[in-house]
Length: 224
Image (cartoon, rainbow, N blue to C red; front, side, top):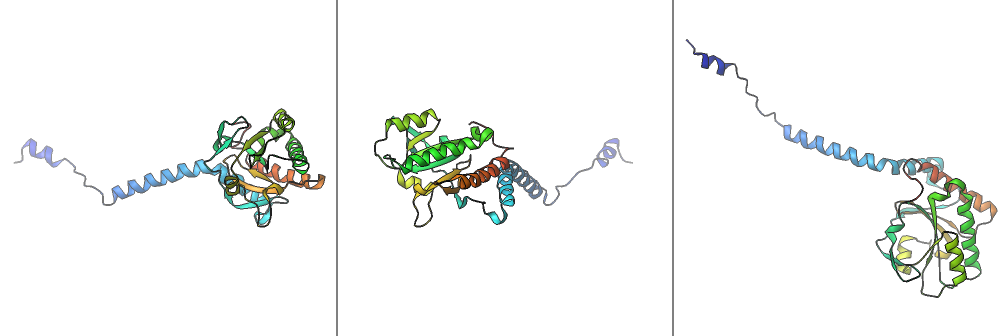
């Protein structure tokens, strides 16, 4: 006759490890991590997808897409007072960039005026866009020109020419001075268009910018 203790032991159910359980947990963890990464990256992918769909075959109606995009280098610029300025501090805002030497006479000044007016054309969206003059040499700047640019909320920095060539490339046989560059809020150079804009060209370039700003509206807001 079995004792009560034997009966109690007989009722205990012992579970054995399921083969592959650890592997399943690892896979589940990796899938969760991948889902988090995709969720964080989705707004960026959506913005570029919408832009490319609006512009069939990945071509802008006026601007030239820079492919592959050029990430912002971890380099220092220099403010006009000599203070170092990390280029990465320019991120988190759309940028319209003009490059030229410090002498900046005639054609250069006209292009800066066009760039200022182009930003104003964006209307309510212009607060999502900063405009920059990046000086690629050590030539002295006209104080009156600098004062006017500061009044119009432009950013003026000296940046090493090699750094600019890496980040803001020009097509073969062309000069950087011939282009206005569009940099996204993540610091990627992704489009350029001619710095010599007449009324018709400015309207086309404006449409390109409006596509980009509309596509990024869900994840990009004015200011940094």
